[in-house]
Length: 345
Ligand SMILES: NC(=O)c1ccc[n+]([C@@H]2O[C@H](COP(=O)([O-])OP(=O)(O)OC[C@H]3O[C@@H](n4cnc5c(N)ncnc54)[C@H](O)[C@@H]3O)[C@@H](O)[C@H]2O)c1
Ligand SMILES: O=C(O)C[C@H](O)C(=O)O
Image (cartoon, rainbow, N blue to C red; front, side, top):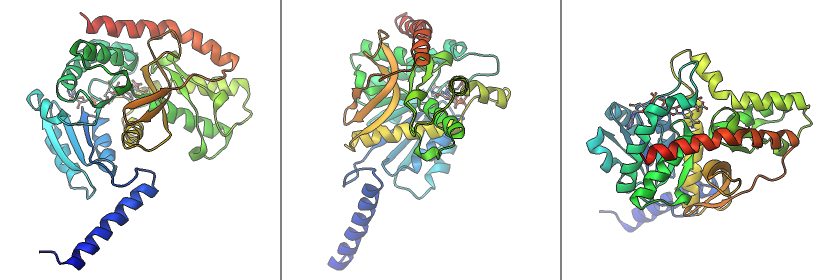
């Protein structure tokens, strides 16, 4: 049994740990229990993402689901001496348990591109995977914040929205297409050209997550740098083609996994901070939107206790960005409509 002095020292150790977390901006005390589920956890993104979420002190329970391979990933990650308890779930019959009680569900399930393919070429396989996972989320964790990574994001987010609507669980505040990797790339490429420290850089990226639908707003980048128009255009193109750059470099062995895991972990962390009431958590994401005439659009959103608290408008655009915005609308509209049609078949 603990004597009063042991209890006092245990209590002060716990409060030291909590105030350490609070100082790091993670939450006000006490840090709430949060369950995060990763669907596709044994994949190229899923494994490093599982590692990064195991390192996140806001997570108390980490649920790793895949059609195969999760017992090994879960056993491995579970030995890391951080806060969360890890459980691996494998096969459809365990999906319900994996999802039950989840606060955040991250979905990197599905096939990646090979050289020569567009993200839309993944539609035929990934649309069906996302449809069945969304149906399970509607059933087992209808209040979770859903972070959709599976491509083509411009279609998979509308698919999930339609499935949730059919199930009567749709809440537009809780569904996110993860476009954080576009922001991560835009920041890295901009810092290189502007010769500013990358940690200080911010660049909003709006639109969608494929080719010309990815629209970085370098006119709003901070710290401001006087870059020539041809440099801005090259930066824009490199950001739009960032995924293809990795697909080609991997030469048939898949697409971005490590940088995506980093970006996915950043976005999930922002969702958790919002849920925990940390103020002013703002990230770009592909969400239901009134910012343009399109029903879904990526822009800056404020995250809070219920998910999306505010969808920000685009702000002032350069002429080049205005043109980019007009150019992306037809493709984005057709990808959204394709997803909606598929979900309602
Ligand atoms: N949003 C983005 O910025 C972004 C970035 C990179 C990759 N992606 C996309 O993420 C997806 C995954 O990429 P990856 O490289 O990890 O692929 P991967 O093939 O390495 O891993 C995918 C995993 O999904 C699993 N899976 C398949 N069907 C499933 C189902 N029904 N339920 C649960 N798991 C299932 C597979 O078993 C596999 O482990 C691809 O669609 C890719 O295009 C998106
Ligand atoms: O490019 C891809 O196919 C994967 C992902 O969408 C990316 O941007 O890296």
